[in-house]
Length: 263
Length: 79
Image 1 (cartoon, chains in turn orange, green):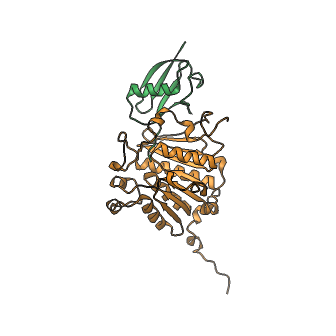
Image 2 (cartoon, one colour):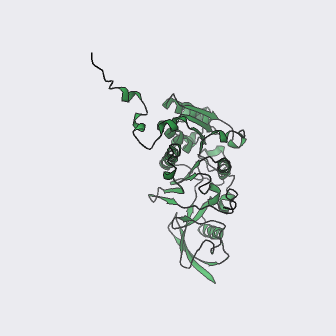
Image 3 (spheres, helix red, strand yellow):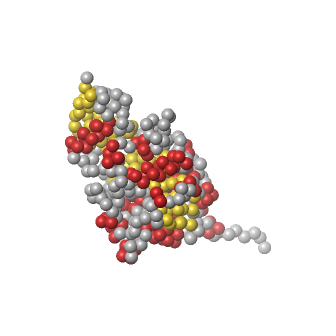
């Protein structure tokens, strides 16, 4: 009897199509330990994309519970989650692991500022899906000091942006900030509705913008993990959905920034 | 010696002329423009071409020159 060819082998490997993309190091993607901070609109999309792209070790931090207003832009939330006021991080982790049971997503329901000192450094990369400047700066400072790549996503309605911070090469989040950021430092631009304090109600998340911003965050994460640093966004990706414009803006290192003193 | 520039509002497309002194900062331009247009509360940055201008810079340090067009753009912070 001659050798037989198993024609189903391609279908047994769920990542077979990803393996065809030559620049993606799927083994590195599978073994990377990534921290996602924020499980709202951006966090939902980021985790979904990460799991589908092959990331298998994810820590997810968010202290909030699901509100009904989240349901129009958060793929993992359901009506009953808001009725039961379930914690966002736990719901996202539970539902995202249904996409790929081999993935391990560990939810944490404390503020990132309250996590142990060694928590952030135990990850190889951080993705920020936050709704306020203060927490962004907290992550930015820790990542810069620890030399951990940080990919920050943000949006307001049809405007979105992604900034990749690769310490010590690139500018950091703080480099591009000014007094208008200081004024809103502790304010949250969330889509959670009445459960958080608003300075002024803003359209924080709109799902098409959320999808674009989160996709860029995860694509840059894939490049970093796959060792393609030269192809990583070195400035700010800025998207304006109303004008159909996406472009790269240049933020230079600020010598007065505490993370770049003397540079 | 004053420097006259044009500031554009990226959200509305409207423009306003500003007369600046050498010691004026980028942040002062942002705050003046935001106040003039009564823009929504939030973070804003000023760009010239592709470059985001550093808020603390004076117009001399930022190399802002007579006739320059700069643009006020929202810096989103939602997630």
